[in-house]
Length: 380
Image (tube, rainbow, N blue to C red; front, side, top):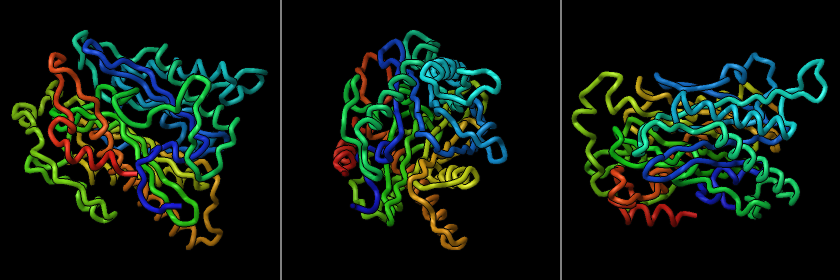
């Protein structure tokens, strides 16, 4: 087994996770929803750091609550308006019998679905068209189908699933799909998308991140130096220098009003591991992963960002039994989560789909730095 970072199947390098997307990539509308379904018995946590979050049911997965976990996590476009897609996901999960058993009500379940949204409203010609209830249901059903197919085929723990579902190939973990369809960064000067990366650790542990990178901050300086360059070098990833990144609009950078272009942001992510973590430990992993945002974009966690990271632990690999050994392992997992998130943010920019010039969208990284994109996408 190769240790270290892997682009590969990103989040789906961790078996048991279902993933589905819905949305629209068109001149009129660029938005969507992504649903992540944890396997049974998984623990979840969340850490919200941005000053302008659009979130749903994050309190119920905090340490000290009933610790049921979550039946799905929704990442969505549309800011708070896009959170209506959660209702569709809840309906689809309830129809499938997924949810917290309602006391005294036989055959009734209440799906627990925490969620977070990015601000991508108005990025198409048709104006404000956030993700819908129907799109939430579609994404959830696709995620359930992926998970069910994996269980039927018995994907071995620690290996990347390579099968297809009855509805087609496994879902993409990167690109202008789902919640990443309309993402941008750098004061909206560069198109972004969804990105995902995994890191293999000794002892069979895997840590992965899936991110919707829609930050106020930029990937680096206009001179072409990445903020995450040191991280890349630490893993021996010697990639070409970037060409000059688009300069943020001066009016956006200077205008501090809530209606400014700069106010339409937020990076949201899920970091996952196959380790067995309790609710406090998985929340600590989510908390530590925020360093990955700060390492990849500058500035991060601003009042104009609603930066939110969910943690998910599938529990197939136990931590060491000794307190000191288990603590060291948790530190290693958390550090890997931050690294995976930084790399996933780069992946989100590399994977953004170019659009026709008539759409009036910002450039992609492939438009301005094709050599960097080619080298990055060649990573295993």
